[in-house]
Length: 398
Image (cartoon, rainbow, N blue to C red; front, side, top):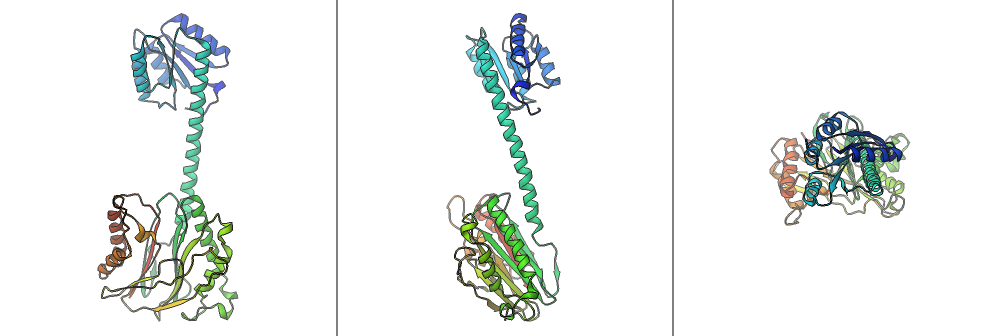
């Protein structure tokens, strides 16, 4: 049905009584409506299914096909919003009226017809249908915008597969809504170094997602300025012309103060892996620390206490280095990975279960360790609907 306004509406009057039908049609035409008529249920149904009406005034008692049968057929094709139907009924037809409303009639008028009442009911039903249809169009536009925004977010995720000599990388990303406040990526900085990060913006929805995209953009700009870094801003643990992760955190903290970001802040873990020395230098800003699974299935967690980005203008961040060995698996993740709650008991999945899952998969294919963990979380949750975004990025050293 096309989008209409009340004064351009096409109305069909269906009534086997010629006097009632013609009188009602003339009054509606004088009120500015475009009106057609049908002299019974068969003719009315044919016009409805072949025509393009915005409202039907339908008599209940007709000799060929009664109005209830017509209404039932109409509702097989059109919803109440797509084609409103007002039933005309005698005052003593209460049971028929109840059935009509249950079959999808929008409203009713009683005979003998009072045109002031008819006009008021017509205006109300058309106004509601117009508002509902405008809301539907707005929702459709919003959904298209959300899909486009989700596409932008997806374009910022790593490309799979990524072949980097000396290491295997894998990641999993599951937003709890159409848009996510979490983000992750990894990329080469030169022949020896690979940068990795995860971030988690507070809250959910559009504002969190926009901040996540903005942080990703500014992070890329900061890293792209490496030729202008002072020696004091370079990472002392990785070697080469690599910017200090802590320097990046301090600059992001300056760029994204919570007071001007809608009270949003974000946790951030960024690190650089030297593929030759297997040194991983990272900064943590309120994020869960890197998790390392060794080839013997033992697990180490390297938490570094620090406040999230944007909370305080004078927050301090430091570089931390850990030495990895061949066969080690390194995981960076947001807290949604272990804070998911069982929908019945409300108990969290927890970090211990997360570590046990990854440790038990130490000899399994690397990507399978991530899939197995997410499967366990979803089984624990007991629902396909997540309560928070999940982002995890891993690296297996050969």
